[in-house]
Length: 264
Image 1 (cartoon, rainbow, N blue to C red):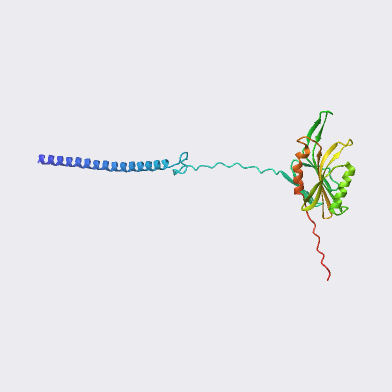
Image 2: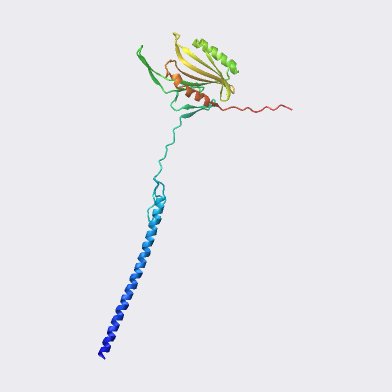
């Protein structure tokens, strides 16, 4: 009887040990299979990443690769604001005589010019000049003036221009003049003249360009002048283009009279 019990206990022990060993072995096999699966997944991910990296052109970054989750977004730098360019030319308007033009911003309006608004002068930047012979220095500048003459006499442009030239010859003893070809101011025909003024000794004093036109019963006289000089950087040539720009931008607001219909 005792031997039978011992045999039963022994058999139960052996069976329990075998069952434990079988379960342990089964758990290990499951874990090994899971590890192999994860390893295969990692190997495949590495192979995919390597393939994509190998396919990038030389010098190209990996910006297009997937960004891992929870990665803070890249902030773009704030672009620098470009300041507004300073205009090179500024507008000038004369409401009384209905004209306007643009002038170089480094020229200044002579506030003292007036005659009721019919005469205005703009002054170029000044230049310091010195005469070594006389040991004296002075500030030189170019001038651009606009003069308006209401109801000019004569009223026709060519006659008015010829009269003006005769007056210049008398006042400044002009012996040679250069009449410019017919040009236009504010889309209206104009005449021009280039001449030199002279001092009491007869030496050239100023170099002048003058333009005349008549619009809506008003004569407009545009004058550009500078001290005479034979130097390569003389004032007349330095600001001549600025003067031409003022002339080219000169505009007059036209007056439109009502049409008179015939009776009947």
